[in-house]
Image (cartoon, rainbow, N blue to C red):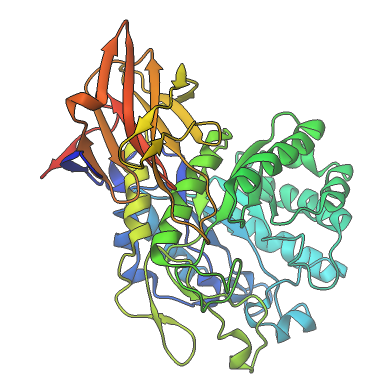
Length: 472
C-alpha cells in the first residue's frame, strides 16, 4: 500500500471465543467420506466462523432397513460443537436400500424418496430419528441440496414443495422447536420457485437458502437476492434468507461451478471477500463459503465406476492432494482465502449493524495514477457501527475478476464517524496507519485524499471497530 505505514495485522479469533457471527463454512460431503475431518476441525475452528453446513447422509446412516448407525455423524457434530462451531444439517440424499436408481449412484446423490409410499415412510422415520438424536445440538435442518437440479428423476417444484411439507412434519415430530430451511436454490428457475410456493411449502419454512455461484456479486448478491426475497415474502413474510453456498476455484483445471476459468489463489480470495460482504449487505441471516477444503465434486458418480466421481474441485480455503480413490489427502494447508475469511470473521462478529454513513466522493488529480481519482459512481461500499460507538466503512471496485486486476485511488468525505482511523486490507488482514497528508478533519467530517482503491474490499475503521491487532 503506497505511502501507508503497516502497523499490525488483524488478530485471529477462535470460534470458541465467538458468540455470534454472520459467517459460515461448508463442511459437506462427509456422507461420501471424501476427506478426513480430523485434520480439518482445528483449522476450521481457527478461522473464527460460526455456522458449519454438514450433510446428513441417509445412505451412510441406514444401510439396513430400520437400523440407524449415527456413529460417524455423532463424531462430526460433537467435534464441531466442542470447538465452538454451530452445525446446521442438510437432510440428504437418497438411499439405495429403498430405491434401485439411488443404489447405482455414488452417495445416492440426487434421488429423493418420493416415488412410492415405502420410500416416503422410510424418509419420514429417518428424519424423525435424526432430528430427535440431535436435539440440543442442531437447531436448523435444511430440506435437500439444490433440488432445482439435483432431483434426478425429473425436476419438479411442485414435488419438492410437497417434500418440504412432509419433511417439516417429520422434523417437528423429532423436535417441535427445530427450524426448517427450504430452498437450497441454485438456479434462476423462477417457474420452479413459483411451483414450490404454490404448494404452501413457504408456511413450513423458517428460512430459505440460496446458492450464489457467479463471478459478479452485483448479480449474485444483488438483483437475484431481491427477487428471491420477493418470492419468499409474498408467501410468508417471516421467512429469513440464508446464503448457503458461494465460492470460487483456486486454479483453472478443476470441476464444479465456475470451472475452467482463469482462477488463482489470489482471485479466489478476492471473490471470497467481495461475495461474503455483498451477501451480508443484503441482510441475510448468515452467509456460508463453499468450502472448507479441496475435494471431489462427487455429484454425478456411479457405484463401481471410480472415474465417474474423480472430478477434483478446488473451492477450499484449505488445499488438498488426492489419493487413488479421490479422498482428499495431505496436510490441508491454508490458502490466501483462508486468511481472508479469518480476517472477515475476526472483525465482523458479535453485535454490529449495517448502516449507511454520510459519504461524498470528491475526485481530484491523483499523482499515483497520473489522472483523476476514481469518481466513486461504480463502487460498492457500506458503513457499519458497533454499540460502543466505533464504526467502519468498506469499499471496493467490483471490476471483472477474471480479466483485470484493478488498482487506483479514491478521495472521499465521511461524516458521523470518530476515533482513531486505520485502513485494513481485508485480503490478508494487514492494518495500516494513514499519513497525515491523507486525512483532513473538519467540522465533524473526515476528508480522505487519494486512498488506495482495489478490486477487493478495503476497510476504514474508526475507534476499536476491528478489535485488537498484532503489532508489527
